[in-house]
Image (cartoon, rainbow, N blue to C red):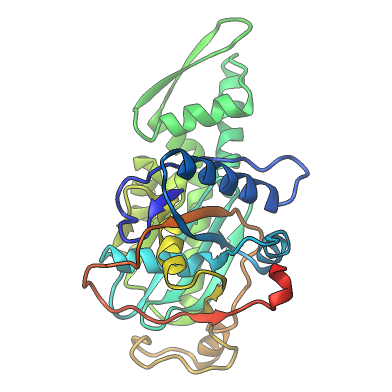
Amino acid sequence: MLTHSDQPHLPPIDRCHVPRRAGGGVDEPVFEAIRQMRGAADQRDELITGTAVTCRCTMHADAIRSGTGRNRLTIVDEPLAQLRYLRFTGQLPDEGTVLLYDLGTSGLTITHADCRNDTILAGKRSTVLGGDGYDALLRWQLARAGVLTDKLTSRRHREALSSERVVTAIDPISGDREVVTRSDLAELCAASLHHSASFVRQLIEESGVRPEALVLLGGCTRNPSIREELAELIDLPVVYDPEPDYVSARGAVLLAAERHSGDVRMARARAGAALSASLVRGPVDRRKLIAAVAVTAALGATIAGILAVGKSPAEPSHGTTSTPQIVRPAPSSFG
């Protein structure tokens, strides 16, 4: 995404999507996206003042950092970028915690985060639940009806159901047709959504802290049926941005405007650390409190490459802005 850092909530100057090549490293699509956005900036005579990349795990951050060469990058922990943008738009509570429910193409990441100090209390990651799995289920249902489609076509059908109630799938060889409704997709996803709700309940039980809200992120949550199902399964107020798959990118833009290179890391609660009394509501077993702060590292990730353009961010006065922990890489990492 190419956007102005003081107006990340507005439509971007340009954006692109670069899929990861089968067998390729995570750094390849990142630097290809950066190359494309730099070309777009040159065509529009825009000056790029910073570049940010969000990562979901240390392994991917290391791969991107090793390929930066002379490029100056800000590498941001994805949950921190999400919290940053939600705070900018006034959607993040000032106190308490939230559950970041990020349902994307490659999987589901659930992060229980403290809004007050931007600390991760706990997290879970599943590569079974996600857009790729839903695409496979949709292809299976169409095949049962005699309509064969490839992966890209089934994905287009699934994404179309986010804005349309009905799509018609056509077999390119036989010409056979099958109508798929939004309700059909919801039924296909129902079992996995119920499974993910058990993840959410487990995180809440382990921490003993009831979140203030459930934040729905990732492209899959664009589908209204999925949002409605999650709202019924998880008894929490729902926070939803109109473009949930770009929340991470826009938050990284804000952080890149503050730090033009280095790592912006999100603190994780240490095992055995005491939780703030203001977070704990009602009697909680001591062993659960200790278990709550033992963080499960989020495994596997997709990456969002963002180019930040413009001036320092001028954000609305909703809530407070916490200062993230900054860890700068060794100079040799950037050549």
